[in-house]
Length: 423
Image (cartoon, rainbow, N blue to C red; front, side, top):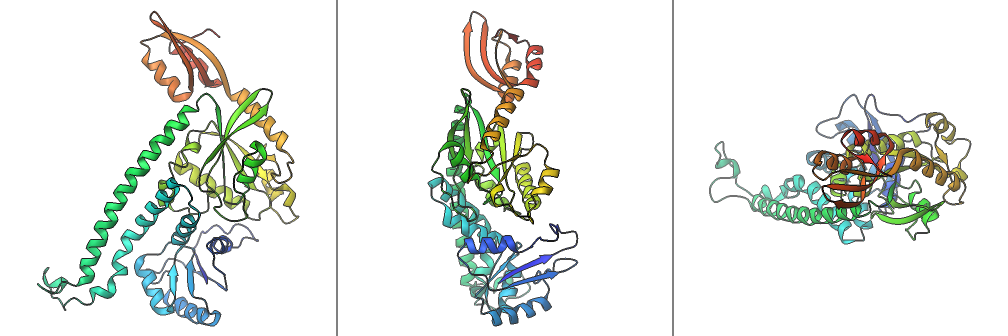
């Protein structure tokens, strides 16, 4: 059973927008069969039951009638809200975050992905441990008003309270270990990304199931898994892309985004998303055949902003034009996204235009130059390291020669900092 709460000012996504469509897709991706949906409109969230006690009573009857065994909320619930709803409905209750974590756990294949998912799961579970052991806490004595009596008096401390403390220590220890492991992976990933500075790097980003992996295969001949399901790809793959005319780039496929992607996952998968953070160009792949493409675009932009990628150059790629029907949002996308490239990764239509657009951006935005400067000019070195790529360095006497790839707009600044262009 799917349940959602609509608050004042919520994005309605247009007349054809289904507020529980994505939750249904996520549930099916997790292996569930959806038997019913329930929506509630409220002025504010109910602290006790999220959707209000009356609606929960109604939900309990609906769940019984539909013979549903799990209730999935399209929101993140507090432990106390989950307990209260479960008590009334007598069914297991999970929220959106737990559902996404479950999907990620089933999709993780590499060691790095498994560590990242486990960390996110533990950080989600840690504040909910108290609720898990509440049945044992009641074994403790009646207690009293004092600090000692509050836990049942001396000698009557409940085994549930002890188990909570044991579990919390175990969780904290495991979380610390996982963070250390992921930090090491993060460092290796950064070194790998920086080692590719000789190449122009491009990342595919977009909503999950927008066709990024299919596009990756079409452009590079990669063997990335393609499946019509959410989060089919969790691990970043990078392949060489021959753009023609002797130009090549490195193209990376990344994990897809969804609305309200849990912050724990964004933090945990930062190492996986390192390719995106350090890219020269982002290709934002958009499902042009969908009815809520505008909402999906906003969700992707939100995650990119959280990663600090707002200033990276990007090209909007309207994919799946072969599947567009008269009710799709393609005509609105054409109006709102100027200079977007329309392609079909499945049929190959428009891929030549996309290559041309990328080549044009490379020529307009970046330039390869060789400069000379004093070896002691640390300010210049720091500036070109931050704003461009140093492809090679030679030293002679007290001078250095740097082979650079820089944004065209930065060349004048490099000259002002003491660099002399020699080639």
